Length: 461
Image (tube, rainbow, N blue to C red; front, side, top):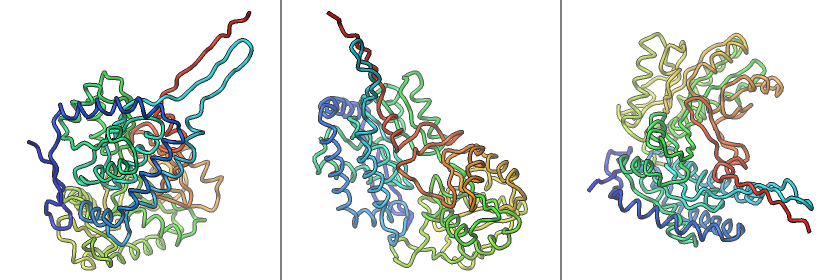
């Protein structure tokens, strides 16, 4: 018997544990889901939308319990609540565009031919969700997948072990058929075995680059389509005509919120020479003003990282950078709560360059490096000097300049005067090692269905 445990970052205790299901039991669950999907897909779209919306309402009713659970499982301070703002915004939008996103494409209806393309559900969609935003990232796929007529199997990260269980409980209580939407506690070996056996018709994975490679290896030869969102090293670029205070507030919040544990968090900032000194001074003051502590305390603004090993990566990057000449601007004495474990003080680094891992490898923690640049061309070169491509944040008063730069940035989303936000009307996608595919927007519906063409020649009398 294999037990999957969630070790709380608050105190290192075992907060939750569940028994991993066997390969045979998991396969049987998928078989039940596949049978349930046939009937679900026959239901009118309006009925599917209504039941999914009811599931979201039922999930919202659990908010008090969810907020505290998230603090215990992955360390987000309770003062920030759960993820229901993003969950509701994304679910509402995807419900609102369902008819448009799933509508047939009519090409001809003449006396001779009727030609059109329809969207058909894949069948059974497997969602492997991460711990950093465990509700929002899962909802990105769950809601449109169910609305499109698919069955959904969800497997959540061990760090947020209870999330999939909660979502399924809420949706089933609201009327979603229990076999149609199931949560499975799976170890890595069983997960790979199921994928290799072509148990699923579409797989959406959010996690590390190495995790994405494991998905591709497991799926090799099965031709199962994969959606992979594998993180980033997102840059911000502050130009001479930027609103300095707004840039500092947004970029630094994007770097530090959720203890920096965000795929589209800001991890490196490039500032034009004329604003560099002022930006750096304000950025250091911003980071120094956090209150590091127990996330169950309402006064805490920066909680622990989700796991000791995640914090160890950030500490190593900072130590290596400082040893190579970087200058840390945040005084560690301001954060006596930093215990060398999950509780990690924020840090701002200057005198950094791209030879340092903190400027090239994903940190996923409360640290950001800031570099001075002399031109758009230099900033562009540095922004593209990365194996990742998720988002880029440009700060200027000139939309044309931002658009022209954006066209040359190797990224999935270009922001101007904004950062660290997911607009459900836009496709959430990436390039390079960030992965492939896209969720949300109309494109999200297209990725969760397959096209089927009809070419009907009419008989003339």
